[in-house]
Length: 240
Image 1: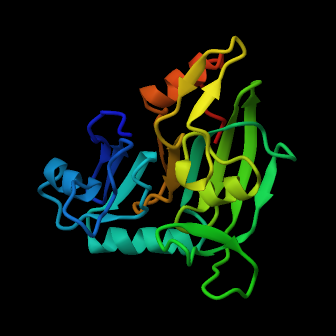
Image 2: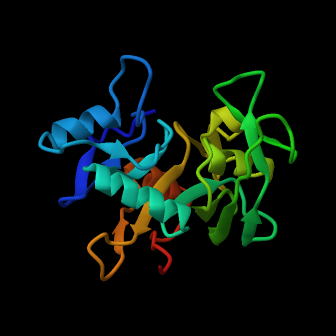
């Protein structure tokens, strides 16, 4: 379900446009529905081009960087290939993974039963691609855990599939077994209307040299409200 916040500009310069994407809005789409790319053109009509350097799933909120020129596109591609394009996500899971901090390296392939989904596949399986996620448990409550996820590769649905394979499908992620409801300690029930995953941090080298570019955005109200309802403390981003 959308969090009913319109996309807005986080940053813009001669090279890049960084937008905050709400949940419920696809980054791109083969259909006719509204997309973040369309919103980017409305918000930045003077850009020579607007190429998204990453594509957040429709239910996922957070930061998306657009290259405004061909040179900027090439710069971001080179940064990815060098491992210098980094992203960090906040996620809510039903409990902490075991161990609490670590990495997931399972390869990912298209689910033949439903091509819209992905599955963990053994190395060498047809269509399987290497996937690597670093994870850290920031806080754990009786009914949920707050995780920091850092994808080292960019596979479709990577974080969601890795979390589900680890036995902790993200709250609200119906496609991969995530709970649609959470029962509090007092017995009250809280509905979870979308996948609780938010791209919180993006960083990459500045094409003009000097300090790396770093962008951060706290999760939208629906994410924060769920965490607070579960008696979670104030959300504080981990250090860079």
